[in-house]
Image (cartoon, rainbow, N blue to C red; front, side):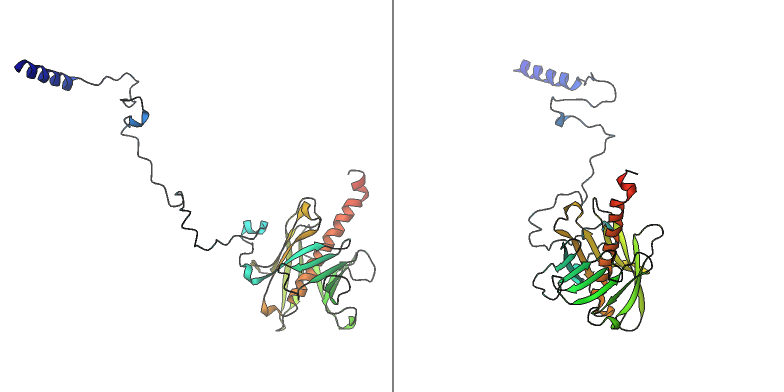
Length: 288
């Protein structure tokens, strides 16, 4: 029995005296197993940092009862902080192509029967309004305002029934305020208090294969507040031409919506005229 105990003690002392032999290059951790998960980690290697709240995966069951997040309106202006966020303060319209160059403006909510408009465009006719804004969905509707867009001279617009009371119209000017291009048009609107303010339609993007780009409406000196926005359909404008939003501002008076629609339709018509000139000009035909 003594011999067995002596043998066990001798084996135990021999195992304690055994030293680990490094067969890899110096500086690498010693490997004890073929499974790398059980390898020793070098002391100079720090542990992986804990994930931040943004990196953690959200629990899908927590968002069942939470309200949806409000997103930017789809516009190039949103990338620069100009996009429309408070959608509840805007009237929203869909713009459709009508006969040839005319447009039909319909509210997104079709139950709103009081906000259907028809825009009649007339090109290069002397002493005739270039834009006629009508109530309803066709050219038989009542005239709500017109705009004169002559080949030379200043553009002007007026709110009222031009066909029934042409002498009662109050005219305002709308002119190109851009430096080199036609990307900015300005006009003046008189508030019910008698104060006159200047507003600008600004082109924010040129759509591919379209004769009119996206537009935003801002007040002079207060460009951070969007008062209107138009988004074109680009190549997909076979029936729907775009989407239009107008901010509801009670201080601007009852005619504010008509002024925005009429000036917007005038900017669109001026852009389409320039596109037709470029398309059929001699320099375009010969490839210059």
